Length: 135
Image 1 (cartoon, helix red, strand yellow):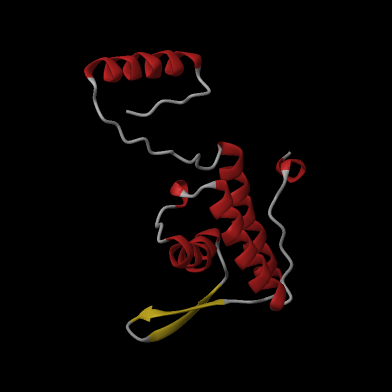
Image 2 (cartoon, rainbow, N blue to C red):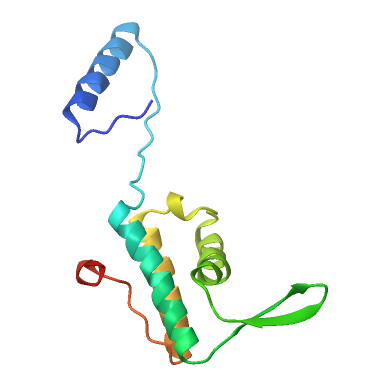
């Protein structure tokens, strides 16, 4: 069972559960659950993919894919390509986490740093969106 200790109803339920466990003399193991990204961070993440995509395409760069019967395909970048072939491999290497929804804010920041540094070395400057860029 998970309790959000910033929610008064959950705090009451948690306290009742603790009282019960104390009364029964039970042993417990507490695990802290870190918050994952917010919906605003999610929107920012997908805007970040779009910003990278737009810059790469504006610079005339093309994504080269070698997976179709050994033939090379060249195509424009898409948000999906940026997410699947840039973001996710870095995320997996750093944290062994496959889904972007499982990342904490701190982990997202680490992946963002790697990506922005990588692209900066290639002459592509991208910054993670802030509240103003989402408006």
